[in-house]
Amino acid sequence: MRPRTTSPDKEAGWLSCRTCGVSIRERVLKRGESLRCKRCGEVVMIHRTDDSFHASCALGMTGVCMALLANVYPIMTFAVAGNTQSNLIITGGQKLIDQGYWPISVLVIFCAIAAPALYFASVAYVSACCLGWKLPAGRFALHVAGFMESWSLIPVFAIACVVAVVKLDMIGTVAWKVGIGWIVLLAAVSLGLSRVFDEDSAERRLEGRP
Image (cartoon, rainbow, N blue to C red; front, side, top):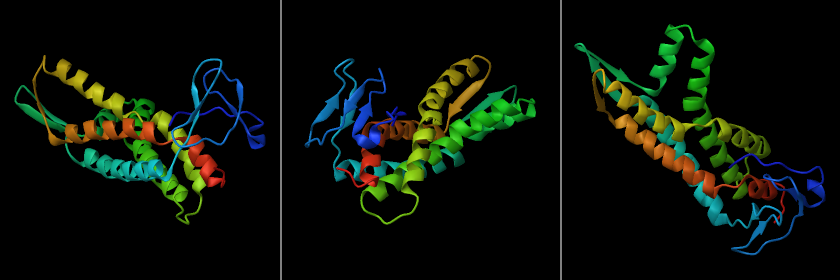
């Protein structure tokens, strides 16, 4: 779910292409149809059924559970000169705090822990609202999901772990632990959720539009 740019006339049935900004008349789509921008070819609107919201709700709840597991299990152990240390996701943030890098530490902890959990939880909540569950503040949760997606960097964190192991292996002994498996699965769920969940479709469903 990438951030969308909407035109001032959205209430009047107009959408704005998030790539080139051209205004496009909103239409009622049939199953399997999509609305593309004539200027750049970007997909502006996709027909969504209840199946897509079932999938995004399930992936969102799965992501919340995996985020918890990824944070409680160690990612790797690093041994050098007889000293062995287990590393969790939060370990990097703690080390930055110890070195006095508070702003960077807060950013790392937010992007690797808080933002992913809030993103998965808010998407699951919005999807449940779109499926007819009588839950309050669905529109607010949708805004939270849109904001948190840009800050949820679990796929980037998974790649960074692999790069870090290559570097650390030059000066010590590195052993993968079960936590890296949960991070890789969490990254896959995050990528899958970005393909299934559509912010514009959810907004229309919350507003009672087709």
